[in-house]
Amino acid sequence: MKRIIVGLICLVSTGRMVAAADCPKHEIRAVWLTTIYGLDWPSAPAVDEESRIRQKQELCSILDRLQEANFNTVFVQARLRGDVIYPSRIEPVAKIFTGTYGALPGYDPLAFVIDECHRRSMECHAFFVTFPLGSHRVVDEQGSLSVVKKRPHLCLKYKNEWYLDPGMPETDDYILSLVKEIVVNYDIDGIQFDYARYPDKVFPDENSYGMYGHGQSPEDWRRTNINRLMARIHDCVKAEKPWVQISSSPVGKYRRYERTPHAGWTAYDDVYQDPRAWLEAGHHDMIVPMMYFRRDEFDPYLDHWLEQAKSRNMVAGLGVYRLNSSEGDWNPDEIGSQIDHVRLHGANGCAFFRTRFVVDNEKGIHTQLKHRYFKYPAQLPPLTWMNDTLPPAPPPEIKVVRDGNLLKLSWDKAAGHCTYTVYCSLTDSLDTGKAQSILATGLRTNALSLIADDDSERGYLFSVTASNRYRIESLPSYETYYYYSSYEK
Image (cartoon, rainbow, N blue to C red; front, side, top):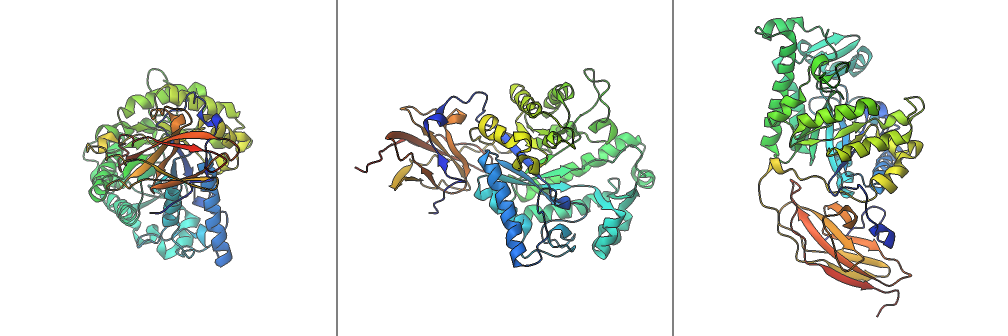
């Protein structure tokens, strides 16, 4: 049995049990961890053992900061622009890790991120740039490793940027080969598609339209191309690992409708994304639209997205980078009001772009999340549509052993692949339906240690549940009462 101390040690105090206003028990709290140009990580290439250690420590520090604020999901950029962050037989490793395309930094970055997220009880999803392949300079620098050089018939140049042509059926095969490489080889919790869209209306795809348009309007044909890719991705992923979630991050406004006739740039009308079709067909488990605008635009578009999502997870992408003085200089209360609106209207959580602005506490946003909005841990919402099996059996009870001022908790492992949620109360009753009762969740081991207050005598009431891969939670274990005194008796 492996015994761990979660994060910075879980502290239980009287203050921790104050009512958690507006803190839901189930909520997705995510960040996009951007690797392109090292925007979030890594900040410098690894050229020797010292810099390799520093690169890995930097990632751990980022995840520690997220764990402090009770984040539970990381979307890590696994494919950038025709390059990737893992050893691939198809595309080169991104040069940000070593300064050279195709060279690993002495470890597998994707495996490392996944392991470190799981160690901190967070899910890790690979976010995947779908069609863009980079500028002319990037393609030249990749040389013979570039897909533009290997598969030129699949690629189009537009405004000095290269793209895979969504209208070519072979493009689907190429993207699927990359998706399968990630899903088969890594313990990933989900895969998310960014830029699964056309760049704009005047994309130069006349040749592929002439070959494959078959009488459809160009607009309908383009949406059909992306819909077909999403269907094939779904079938490929679920055949390998049915628990892996499929999601996308579409443009922040779905389409123009009666409440917002002057919406401007939209997913459906301007870049030919139709997330509603992906959701209705069962090809997506979650959408995370990039809603990087203020309340007068944010509120009606959130409501519109919720209408499309139905029973699947809808997570609002929040532009926390807008807090920066050079990116919009927003007041942090703007982000707070968006979180409030998300919760009030029943969305499943928030994702923040980008990670760096959260961990660097831009305008106090990390502090605000840690002490107010994400004050308590949250379970990830159950994926009930993905699997209808019964919940796992609960562990019998928690065993508590004192070691100085540490309380070491342990319990029997549940059958199958499970994570655990530990509940705690300082009173004589324990309400497992409330967020403030959660001591830790998403645990991948059957042990937890916490620091007790060495200056007071107090009773603790503990219980634990097990959740399967689809986040279906068991009934609680029997409650365990433990009385702690500063004097051992």
